[in-house]
Image (cartoon, rainbow, N blue to C red; front, side):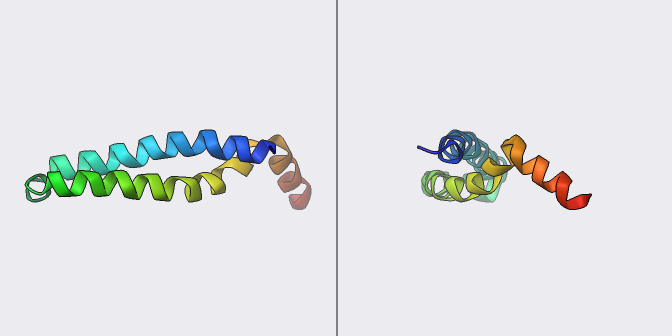
Length: 76
């Protein structure tokens, strides 16, 4: 596997945790949403699981040194 694929996989797990945590806190802290938590929390799980790989795919290349080297070359 390529390095970008490994990075995307590991970053995806972290992004998934952040998205789920944000969604869960939002659902549980707003009283109107907390009443519907038994429906909204599984939805938050599905949305965070589905969105995480796409967001991670944007982040993963930026974690490599060659990305920043190329960027610095383009500025010069």
